[in-house]
Image (cartoon, rainbow, N blue to C red):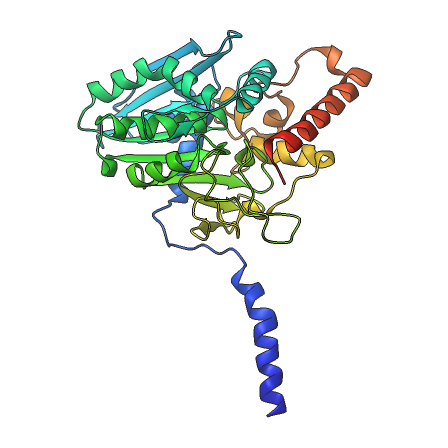
Length: 361
């Protein structure tokens, strides 16, 4: 009897830990092979032309054609947003890809808008004002592609800001009757929150094939901050699904807690609260002094530094990727020495400021 009780004790001590280990699950239709191909397309949006990344992604015989590519001014400081669409005539599939943040000024503008009140998104909920207006600037080209290929299924994708725009574009596409839900798919990488829980709930209904891929301690998916349910007495708290004002994630988080190699385990996050599964990345806490780790995780997906990877034509040149600056890093020699130190200190202060005002735990 004593031995039996001992085994029961061991079971309850260790089994819960095993159940928390991420494995290659199949509870959703998430496809990592597809996700890796879409990361190539998302990276290509950072290049002057995405053609090299398109060719790398689709090695089989064409026709696959770049339908359109556009850059539009999308805020009051003349920062630009970009997108392109790609038609696969063999499989009757359309890909609509959005570029991430292009400059430090744009990054700060996004942050400022996140502190402002959200705005109505066609009567179904509230959306982040920056993301809303950025999509409006790009929408004519998006709509043109959707109209010209009316019978094609469509996949939206993007990294960072590009993921936010892809998210709202997929929702608007179904909401406006340009596609039915079963013809729309969404894969994003390091996507920030785009709207409140009412918007998230409608997004879940209209775009059920929605996958938000999150890498480790990437901080961007936790911005802007949600309202925290502080009933639990811990340093980290789950997002409050009853708060109708603060941002809240839609869709299914696909969480890679560590590496993103081909054999790396991941979580398909379907737990509570849905959209903000507290067993996945929402359980993380963020400390300003560790901001290098957070930005590194945001820039790197599937073992590539995304913006430089795209600029290099999606070639396997990882050493060159790391040497190239990101879109919002300075290219000048003035970034050296004390100036570099003061810049990093400034960034740390901005993250501390964001932690206080955006509700990051």
